[in-house]
Image 1 (cartoon, protein in one colour):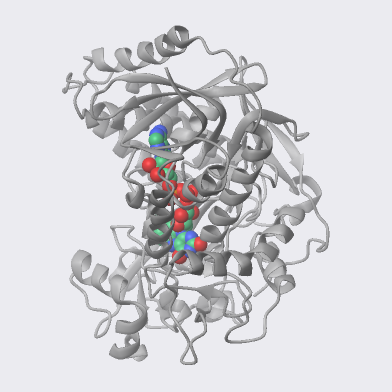
Image 2 (tube, helix red, strand yellow):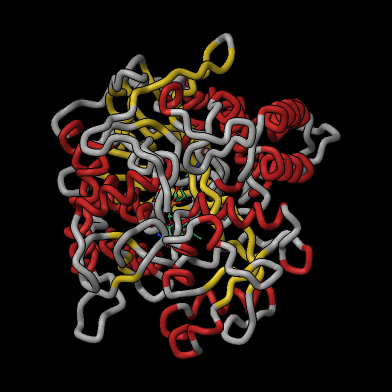
Length: 569
Ligand SMILES: Cc1cc2nc3c(=O)[nH]c(=O)nc-3n(C[C@H](O)[C@H](O)[C@H](O)COP(=O)(O)OP(=O)(O)OC[C@H]3O[C@@H](n4cnc5c(N)ncnc54)[C@H](O)[C@@H]3O)c2cc1C
């Protein structure tokens, strides 16, 4: 049995920032199914928010209000306050760690505008911000190699929980297929989001709901899963992200008639309204037949920004347009469509990174979560751009501090290695042996298709019921699939099947919670209930797995400074 004081699952921004904190006094393992710098955080383009006030006067109070209004008042305001207050310090710390930010002419950290932020607040490294931060953190971890061991290309299967205490994880080495138990005093999940359940998504292949489902399978609830963010600018048919930084720099959105249609939907913020509003506006134009050339896309126009600015500020995404669509945004418009981008929901935590097991906030001893897999909830019903990298770093650090408080000086709990291993091996072997007639690729495609068409930007009762029924059918077919590679070495087929199982489970949870929330708020829009309903739905959803099936309870929203108000832009 492998033993570490703390095991962190995930080497994105949240996992690595947490490790840097915890390794000050503890022996830390970071386990990741992809090489750390391949974590999805590295794909982040646009920026990280902080009220530095380098281009216009700004304050944490304004950042707080923008975040809450952007989240449609579902955010827990005590957590938002702590988080926006920490932002400027966090940026300077990242800079001191070696993260290179773009500059103003007088040498300050440059800041650009982003949707829903009333001030230019996004600190950035051209359009490779996540890449810059991820590498800086990875370097810091390598500097601490005596207290941090990184398990690259290992897969976490399951949590080890005894009563109200978490004592480790069951994992396997992807290279050899060997299953191992890691005994730990504390476990941290930083496993990222689950955008891959949708057909059109900006998310990396690794964003597949493994962490959230491992928690759910241990009887823990998931919070607000119905809130999935669709980003307005995914490359048409590809989903690959074309950063909001383009609109931050001044790009226009045009429908098939060449009109800047945001005039109708958000006249004061136009293209820089929050993502939920812009994505719905685009989808409405497409559904009304005003897409470009009658297709399901609209145009992003950067031509007026000029070659020099595009090459300085947006070089990477220009190249994406050339590589994937053969279109150069310096001379032509880019066709785009809404793309599944971010999961506001996840494993419920308090604002110190402790996972909670119920709507009253009861802590699970030794289990922590941070980053996109967690729901604190600082984003409420809709996250503002650049607030997620900030969340990963702020709450990664906080979870690390909480781990130190909890785990220094305590003993390991007993773990029955044979029993824990056998539990996972049984599931693993069961998949290996499958020799049915169903194709896992077909099942995956059908899941993505139904989630996109029936549980996407616009939802209604009828569509959601069809969606759930279809997903249940796919879950049945999943048990009768065919595995072609029976080998142990680097058997990526097996891991993709395990991920698909997790995604199917997560898809059902999203759709059921969406059916239950009979209102429209943030990223969740019900055409049959198009208004926000604070009287009946100003609460978080808490989805539990019980012997009698899924049960959805509610958790109050923490409101401190800002009473819910009408959300207009
Ligand atoms: C294309 C794109 C651009 C974005 N741009 C921005 C931006 O400009 N600003 C912003 O604020 N936000 C942005 N976001 C959102 C932001 O990047 C993410 O929310 C954030 O980086 C998530 O960080 P994380 O550490 O929680 O998870 P991730 O970086 O996703 O890392 C997850 C980690 O978990 C590991 N993992 C998962 N499951 C397992 C398992 N079963 N076993 C072992 N390891 C596992 C993975 O290997 C990985 O290391 C963007 C997102 C995308 C997709």
